Image 1 (cartoon, rainbow, N blue to C red):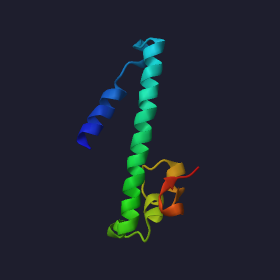
Image 2 (cartoon, rainbow, N blue to C red):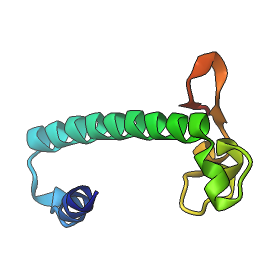
Image 3 (spheres, one colour):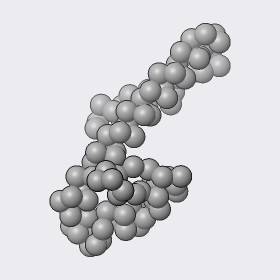
Length: 92
């Protein structure tokens, strides 16, 4: 996770105004792909937390209640994780 944090810090410092249009669009495509991959990873982790009941370690009864009470989660995710079909996914 440290390497991921360092990479995100480097991206935050990237001069987007200095990129020509083509490379800027390429950068956007890659960034969206990275967001999708991170969302898939978070979904896997939430599912494992739910299956193992790991949220009880912090005093929450369910993964959904843990997410709702955790600062820093995007609002749509905090209240919208659904366990339908045996998998967790962010809901609008």
